[in-house]
Image (tube, rainbow, N blue to C red):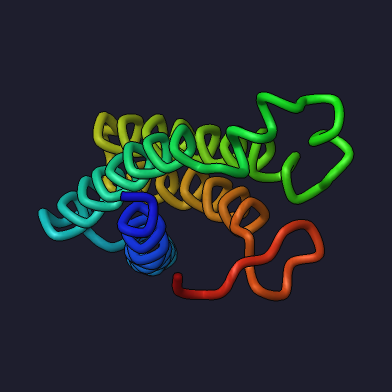
Length: 152
């Protein structure tokens, strides 16, 4: 089960990133060109938030099954000295939950805005902040904090 969760979490990460970047592309384009917020824009907004929530559920299950996290919580004093354990035990999950909350709030606010320009602006601001947080919290292969391969 752990290997399956590892694979699902790794693949879904790319879906979240691609959808978030695509939503931002459409939002910035719509905002700067004074475009109309179409049904497609609304669908992309909705699916970006939905895929992020799916990733959160997979991530939470993965978190509680992870031997690294289990070691972190059972051996708190020793594990907090290892940045790899600290990263996966606290930092990664905290930042990702914050990013998902920001995506959720931004999506909800954009949905309720009255003008198309306000909808695009709301998505631009909130989703850019979420993307920045996600980029920090992903254990990239080149990360000095904790690294993992692009696909697992």
